[in-house]
Length: 297
Image (cartoon, rainbow, N blue to C red; front, side, top):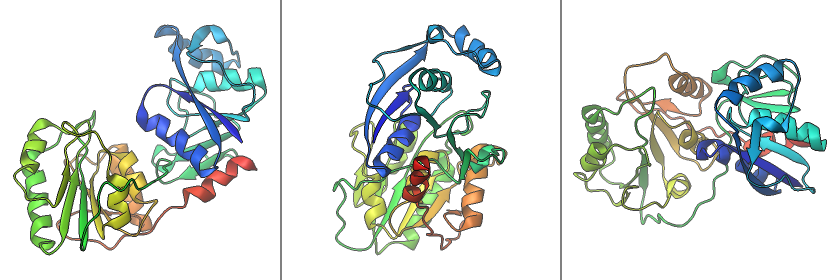
């Protein structure tokens, strides 16, 4: 199987499409797409409503391969192009997220439950983002271990240094006999990285200094992984691989956003626990490989 993946340049979107291809053991080619101008994105909503599709609205940096079997994408910058190209070449159209503001008439849509997707035959409801985890061998503990995965600020959250310190103090007190590993992300604020450097981690990766990604290794080895609530992609990886209990670290008190909604749904289903000063025992794993097979039907 060969897949054309449309990319809007956001790794969190692109990685979901790549994960689908890897679960299918398919070859794939990434094709960057963008609207010709910003106004054309708004126009695409109107044209989609009237089922009008034109190549004029967007540009592809590379052509769609003639040998591909389907077009896959995630992100609002890709959905109109997905529909247009799939119709032009007679290919199956698949989206990895609910394509809000567009008609839900793709061949198949994987939609996260926190987006409240409607019930339709072509919509597959899933609890989190699609992911594919491959350990890299960066982290090799010599005894029992705990992993801490730190995200950062976004439109919904600003990291609180004092809250983070309280959470870290608990972890070090409770797991003082364990190797404790930490990794940060491109969004981690400098003051949080500075705070982390005050602790004696057995293993640490600060993204500002080292851009490797040891998350898969944490999931492979650790008994418990703590992950800040801001990153749906990192949480999705944690609930799909390994045997670790997953503790989701709240960043603020805000609870009326998709991040908290996702965390709460995962907790209700046994995939993760929202850390509240106590530890849960949530290590259920989602099987994305089985979900991936649905595109073959």
